[in-house]
Length: 274
Ligand SMILES: [Zn+2]
Image (cartoon, rainbow, N blue to C red; front, side, top):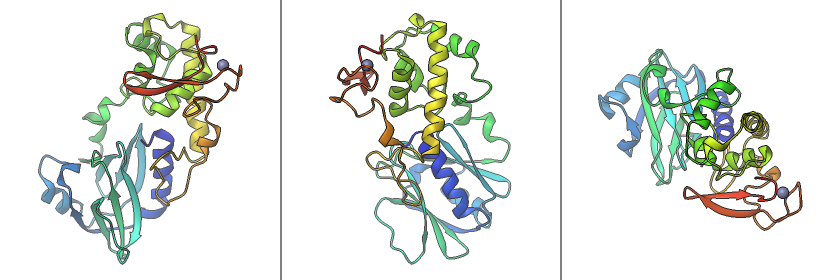
């Protein structure tokens, strides 16, 4: 699943590829991806003739700003945008095609078909779901210790599950939560109510550091995720615990193990993470 660094990499790449290009028409092969009350035909009519002005991101949502409207898209498990010439054949997983006036196409591919596209008038996007359900990112000013304490210490959920909850903190998925908790020295199964202030500070720092570092490296290319230009991120080369089960812990040399937490594969060192 693409996480924040992969989505940020996609945002930067797509911005170079689509800004100042104009939508001539749209083909929708899988209407369920389009989350627009007025229907798919109105979605298409409304976007025809609009030009991409910029691309933003909140958490794992991409926001395509056009002439007065904003298209908010979540890639979910396997979604990918790419820009191709109209002469290049598409495949059976291409579900939405934005035909551009210059003969290129912005294509949305999604093997699992779980991705979404919402359309709003610019300015309304932050006042309604899905973006109202997205919490601050680890490096936002609003991600204060008081805020984090209130969300974690009043919860009986396991810390890993709290960190995966995008309404608490946006942008951490399975990979970066495992990395963050390892760096912070906190066991993923600890209950929120048992986490001390000093540990919360370490988690905040580790989360911000891990995500920023991964953004710089272009994200991690794990399984099917490749960014929009087909480039491969390199952060997976420096993963400390994620997918490292059976190898020695970089801190203490004991074996990294893999367990299940809330149904998710979880990697940790039981000596370093109490
Ligand atoms: Zn260790």
